[in-house]
Amino acid sequence: MSSSNRGPLLAIGGAEDKLGRRAVLSEFVALAGGPRARIAVVPTASSLGPEIVELYEALFRKLGAAEVFGLRPETREQAADPTLVARLEEATGIFMTGGNQLKLSAIVNGTPFGDAIVAAHERGVAVAGTSAGASIQSSHMVAFGSGGATPKQRMTQLAAGLGLIRDVVIDQHFGQRNRYGRLLMLVAQSPGLLGIGIDEDTGALVTEVAGHEILRVLGRGVVTIFDGRNVVSNAHEARRTAPLLASGVVLHVLPAGSVFDLTDKVLITEAPVVNASEAEELAVAGQDLKRLARDIAAGDVSPSVLRRRMARQHSEGDLHD
Image 1 (cartoon, rainbow, N blue to C red):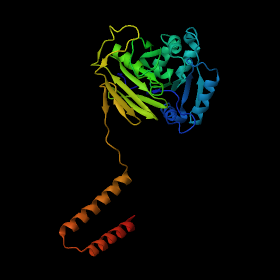
Image 2 (cartoon, helix red, strand yellow; image 1 turned 135 degrees about the vertical axis):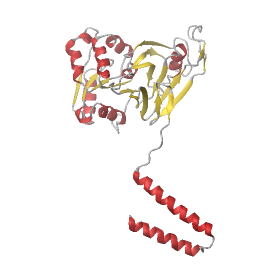
Image 3 (spheres, helix red, strand yellow; image 1 turned 120 degrees about the vertical axis):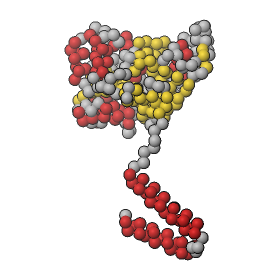
Image 4 (tube, helix red, strand yellow; image 1 turned 180 degrees about the vertical axis):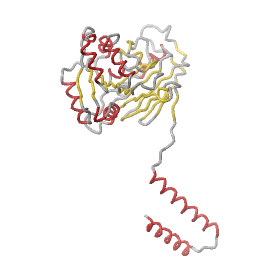
């Protein structure tokens, strides 16, 4: 990313909490403007009918959004409809539902509707997606494939994504459906791509900071990252469904709160935050310990005198509270 005007991206691994704290969806509504949010729900990937839009409309309104409306191109011809495309200009947030990844890619990519999603992101609109709607945010997306822990030739297939996050491939339902092998296969075959696997009810929030794409993990699970820049692999010669050699891949397993620099491909360690009241309590405790150590070191204070002195110090402290 090169422009600081670009909006935040939120890739969700599917099955996000819709009944409890709804931490991931709440974050999206806040990013879209909170009480001023106008959210366009794009259910193109879903096999469900109008009820999928009704579900997310109820959820986002419950979380405080001002307006929620559905935009559902079902063909590439519909994705070129100027009226449909123009409605995206009204949105402060765009949310793409789960479903069939290949259907979403085939209908949206390379159309005015897909271009309008990219343009909305460029001008600062928050773009989110769950499951298939997460995968299409990357430059390359998993079209379909099988699960399993061992990377095997022809385990999965790629399709073009929207390219909102470049040089990555995103997979979802990652831990729950054991998709380690297929993401490793993709990284072994295309070492220039960073593999990102997102668990269910987990979000990878990507924002730009000082010219770097920064990923922060939200929700209940983890985000798994495979960095294959230095991989040694036999992917170019392995036959049919043979297991692949994949040596030297760097693994990052990132729980909620973790921060990762996608540009430099490194973990960011942040200093712990201590609030003001905790800091004051720690300072007072430190002073008490220093006085206690000084009294003990003096060696001329009896235990009874020391106890009385400490009691007096605590009572004085209570008076100041």
